[in-house]
Image (tube, rainbow, N blue to C red; front, top):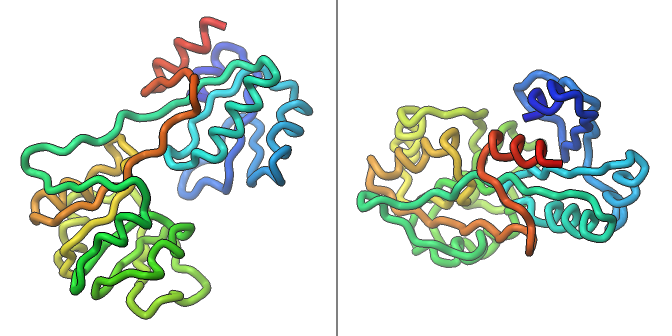
Length: 229
């Protein structure tokens, strides 16, 4: 998307919450880091004379999306949210939906062996885990030990093939998968592996986009929207 905007002669600034891992630097000025306090995004955007915000943040980063949408509505700045379509189960899947990671964890039965990639920030949600073990994937091994005796870190950098996921689930004897519904093709291999192995999936529903926001599902739609400005 950035390349398409630059090709049109647009002045683009990228804002990332943390450095991207395993990818080339973006070909535009890039701000890295979270915004300080509730007014951090507003102050930065005003200092940069931002006139359009294309929000392609993680589907579960609803805090930053809501901040960006609120700023745009208050300062007459165009706002659009890019969200891949959600995953939907087939007749071969065993999914149960939950509103939050904490609710999914609460539904884990005793003795269950769980794999999850809900991220470092979800650690508090596992405080009352009732299963036997939960493997939490990290793109790099944390410097600090696991806060719970039943939680083990598994290092891995995406993308992962279905074959890789099946081998991992089989080796760890996984019986449940806790997964956030981020959508898209790249992350679906774990769901295909769970389907093949008959593993039950505890699917965490995606939070809704900002109220009243324009939402598109693809880069092509985002570029078409921007061209109308």
